[in-house]
Image 1 (tube, one colour):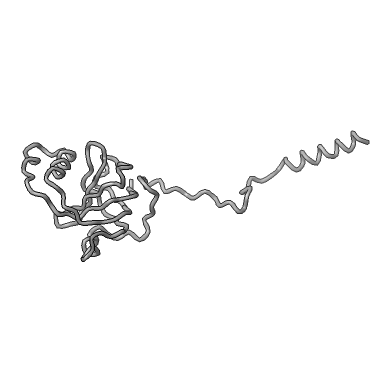
Image 2: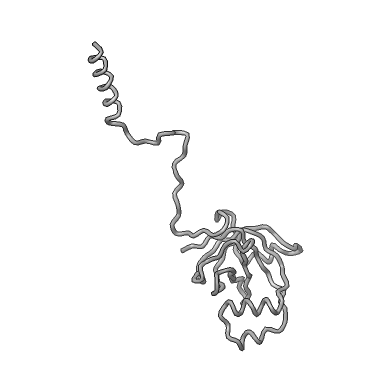
Length: 167
């Protein structure tokens, strides 16, 4: 009798395990989100939602010292030593320098020409002659070009906490 009971139990166990469908074991647990492989992320995780074109930044800054915002545009220069800053084209032969919060991350040195989304804050900054020369050196400018820098500049700058670059 014990053998028959054990045999029935064993058959029931094997039968219940045999043809199980592999569905989401926990229906309350969502499926993993799909990853967009055309985007590269740097720094804090951000989204592309609500980004304004970089050409509109100066207009939105009127009368403000700084403004938290999300911006999109084209990268027109990257630090060639580390990727520790980049420039975005504002149009009219002007650019906005983008640095990265707490120097915590860098972008690829070959990112020029790519579309970018940044999240952080824009501000007007006076950049010293020494710093301008440093940036020119990082960008690979010639000694003659670096020597031509003799006055500080007031420029639109941006500190990004997160960056997305389209591949």
